[in-house]
Amino acid sequence: MKLTTATLLSIQLPFLVSAHYNPHLARDNIPEWIPGGPNDFRGPCPMMNTLANHGYLPRDGGNITKPNAVQALSSALNFNTSLAELMFEMAIIANPEPNATFFTLDQLNRHNVLEHDASMSRTDAFFGNNHIFNQSVFDATRVYWTGSTLTADMLANGKIARQIESKAFNPNYTFTATTEQFSLGEVAAPIIVFGDMQSGTVERELVEYFFAENERLPTELGWTKKAQAVTVEQVGGVSQMIAQAASLLTDGAAATKKRWVDLHAGAGF
Ligand code: HEM
Ligand SMILES: *[C@@H]1O[C@H](CO)[C@@H](O)[C@H](O)[C@H]1NC(C)=O
Ligand SMILES: *[C@@H]1O[C@H](CO)[C@@H](O)[C@H](O)[C@H]1NC(C)=O
Ligand SMILES: *[C@@H]1O[C@H](CO)[C@@H](O)[C@H](O)[C@H]1NC(C)=O
Ligand SMILES: *[C@@H]1O[C@H](CO)[C@@H](O)[C@H](O)[C@H]1NC(C)=O
Ligand SMILES: *[C@@H]1O[C@H](CO)[C@@H](O)[C@H](O)[C@H]1NC(C)=O
Image (tube, rainbow, N blue to C red):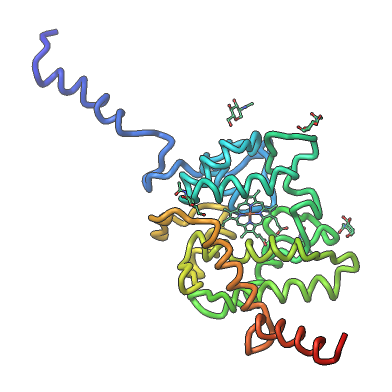
């Protein structure tokens, strides 16, 4: 066969195209979404499951080392490295082995290690499976998501409602001050990743898609990761917003705390 420019082109074209076409990248340019199968580890965190479903974390949900976690959180969500490292360091206790260097997503299921009662989308360990998405629990939370744009108040109301439900009907309800700190971060998470941290709001559509549509990043709804890296301080700020919004008083939780101290001081005890 005589090699003409045309045949060269037709031979080369597929290679030129394939150099740009990665079969693991979906059309929205993020790694293909493949939900975990029966042999894959998944856990109670909708985001860690999501990152494994997209292949940012090992797809089998194992070997979550610090480098793997940092790489996933920064490339998928643009989390600042210090934030991602801190999150990994807080989570490594999930692996019961001393001096563990990795954890697996199912190790996050261990009750009252990181996993806790009164979750937004999972039932309490006392009632059933504490780590798979539970539609009736999620619906109970969503009763309080009363607008198409979720606010810190709506998210906080859902959180409180879940705690009242558990405190009333789960005789083994456990929720410590440490649990509260993690819980505030989890309730803040949708605002941090999918919403606007300044106003403390997020489109309900994005949050519902993420939780309930098999744990997937809502790129097809137009979401993209933040342009600016998310910092530890910002996460603290949004968690604090949720804490304020979780007060049942209308003049703010901080003011209340102050007055309580004043009352005690005034009463001399
Ligand atoms: C090292 C990283 C992370 C680890 C180890 C982790 C671990 C966990 C664990 C153990 C839970 C279960 C708590 C419960 O019982 O409800 C949880 C819940 C949650 N996580 Fe993560 N997480 C991580 C990162 C993230 C990120 C980046 C997001 C951002 C969206 C996120 C969003 C959530 C949400 C929304 C919940 C609450 C689920 C519910 O209440 O139903 N997590 N996470
Ligand atoms: C676990 O992840 C690390 C990177 O953090 C990698 O070097 C190692 O090969 C992985 N181990 C397995 C068994 O996949
Ligand atoms: C990450 O955030 C911290 C503040 O929390 C900042 O000091 C640091 O420079 C940031 N790192 C990068 C790589 O942007
Ligand atoms: C874990 O690390 C500590 C401190 O480095 C060390 O003293 C201890 O022997 C280690 N334990 C195991 C089981 O490797
Ligand atoms: C019950 O509560 C105890 C103490 O808080 C805790 O250790 C245990 O894991 C809980 N079990 C269930 C099923 O909730
Ligand atoms: C879902 O949650 C409800 C309410 O707590 C519970 O009755 C049901 O057993 C849960 N389903 C599973 C599969 O755990």
